[in-house]
Each structure stands twice: as C-alpha cells, then as structure tokens.
Image (cartoon, rainbow, N blue to C red):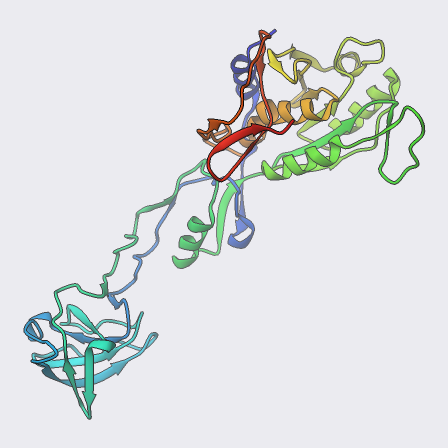
Length: 361
C-alpha cells in the first residue's frame, strides 16, 4: 500500500502536458498560462492626473493657501482622450481631468476643491508638492515586465492588466478530456422509479463539477452493470474518446468488482492499487497506451477525496500547471479529532468566519 505522497508522485511523473492553445481573453479565466506574457507597453501609457483639477508647476504654488491664494492663468482645458496641451510656462496652469494627458512642464495637480476660478484665471488655495496627485508613465507596469508566468492559473486581476495592455487572447494549456463511468447493478438514473435495493447514482454529477473546476472537460457516460463483458466494453468505448477515464466502484476485491480485470483484458497496465488514506484506500491508477485510468471507490465521499488528492493534480499537470496541490489554510479546531488507525484520515469540516473548524458529521 502506497503512501499518499508516493502515489501522487507516481501519478504526476506519468503525466505529460497536452500542449497549448490560443484562446480569447474572455474565455481564459482560471486557465493555466502556457507561456510567459510580458507587458507590451507602459501602464499608465503617459503621465496623467489622479483626479480632476489643475496641472501646475509645484514651485509656482508652494506658498499657496486659503489666506494667500496664488493666481495662475489657465491656458487650456484637456479632457481624457484629448491630445496633450502646450507646455506650461511659469505662472500658468491647465484645466485637467482624471486620466487626461498631463501637460509638459507640469509636475503636480491641484484638486478642483482647492481652487477658485475667475474668468481665464484660477486661484490656488493650497500648496502642491512635486508628483502630488499625478500618475506617472510606467508607474504600475513597465514595458517588458512579466504580467503572467507560464504555469500560473490566470486570475481576474491578471486578465484585467492584459486587457489594459491591448491583449485580445492568451496562450493557455489545453484542457484534458475525462470520461466518467459509474459501475454497479444497484445504481439507477435520476428520474427513474427507485425499486427496493436500488440507489440513485450521484458520482458522475459530482465528478463532472470537480473536473470542470479543475480545468478539464467531463464526458459522462451511461451506467455500467456489474458484468465483466459490460465493464470491458464500457472501458474500451470510454478510452476511445478521452485522455483519461475515471471509474467509480468495482475496484475492490468483491466477486462483482470487474474494473481491474476488464482494464487488463483490453490491454491496460495497472501501475498501483491501494493508497494509505481514509476514505479512499481502494484506488487504481493504470495506463492504457498513452491514456490513463483512475479507478475511484464507489462511495461518494471516497470518490470525492480520491479525486481531490490524486486526480485533480493530474488534470492540472496536463494543463501545464506549476502548482498542482490544494491550498492550505490554518484554523483552530473547535472540537476533538482522533485517528486510531494507521491511514491518514481526511475529515470533512466546516470553516466558520472566525477561523474555527468543526466536523460536518
């Protein structure tokens, strides 16, 4: 029986990224960046005011106050999108608005609230320091700066900056296609009358959502009855349309657990079976040609845990992710937990706003 770390390492060592594709920026959120992206221009692209007011030379208004206003001639008005105005000579100013080009020769902006206009003149009622209320060219991003690193999962913030630099698309890792098979004579589809001894199948819906959340494309296939022939045929069909196949159920040692046998009969090679975790001990990982089998337990909680621990990292590696592990949070136990067994136990908990965790039961 493998440790979790050894099982994860063996899975990841078998996976090769699928390559990259160019997608529109609006379709790339949470995708894995396929290459480094450098800024193609400075942000801001030019010096501009951080607020509405008057562009000035700071030395002209260094003594300004409400009781000692400084009077400047207004030589132009420049709005956002306008061409820059002529440069400032001493004792002159330009009416400016947030985001408009800053006039050459100016080095500060006086807020509109600290001024009083009279005709072609403005009275400045407060002193200004050099650089005050000015956003300078390249202050946020300089041309050539790395905006995205290959292997990163793209965030809204990164995509916003890419859009601001004029990018319309981004190179990302291709999504793996994952076929899902659920096995078991006891399983019935939702919407079907439930006979005695039967249960509604739920793993495919859960796994489809987890696959999508991990960046993959889920293909949910029909339920598989507990026969060797049916399991073999289902696996053969599934491998014909996916990069990997996830099965749930049929991987233990019962008389009707046929997944491992059927997999070997179609030419698959089992890499390992059994991982020292709870829930999720009976987990199968195997290779069929250039594709892979992830055999999960049928219990919904076991399937959920083994997906997160062993399948999700593979999906991310296929897309070229540099980080494949789950995020870790520190919290305070609000109740006692114990693990009398030898396997690592993954417990489902609820995290409250205060950072305390309790078992979900």
